[in-house]
Length: 195
Length: 162
Image (cartoon, rainbow over all chains, first blue to last red; front, top):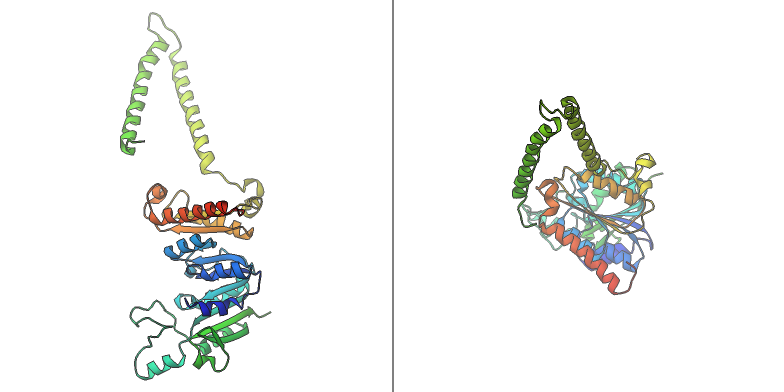
């Protein structure tokens, strides 16, 4: 999710001074922002060589790891916040990683494209897969192997006994709390393990 | 070294053969002739064997001191405890096909540093060249190390504590 406004909205969810693990941190922009503006510390996890270079160039700690191999390297509850920003839709083991996220972190914050956003629904109604600013790929070349909705995710969280501390939609950097499943291009969830 | 590895190996081989060739006349000198015997042939034979054996053992000890180095040996294998004293920032780079310093070992170190909440970055470079990959001009490896050093240089130049 490259749009700065959406990143800022997510950064607001991370308490100041948190120890953060950012799964699928991309070029490290969010971690960089959190370190400079919210006194956070932590690490990014990435698989892509180019992104690793970008993170190191920025001076963001980054660990090259394939998330499909799990998070064995990280101890239980060793981070205040574990982020999965636009990562979920690329993972083969999305459900395992969801559990790992709340194992490693006290709090998990996830954001992913909401497939049930109304323009996507309109597109499906006309018989075509959606191609939008948020989902810019053609069906045959998309890197997104998991297409889910805000409502779908709430169900997955419940199935895994996760506590949804907060959830809302994001659209152009604005929180959407009314009908987020219909009205927002991005779904955001803040989760904790049930005690 | 302008000589290629192969040429160097050939020359070393030739030197080895030459040195070994000299041992034959030396043995003759040491045992002497039937008319004027010097040292007992048994003594010379066992002496040669023992000397060669000791040299081999010394060589193995020196090389294995590197291979079997374990910083956590005195701490019951607890690498986290072994690295607890380190306060600097770390960059680890491994190559996927390196059989000698495998990525698995590097990940153990990364984990120990994470447990200690140290600054650490880790790049695992997918290269087919085995242990020698680090000698080659791999653009990803070069770029990672260069960026890391550039950051240190910038931090030093701006007077911040690196």
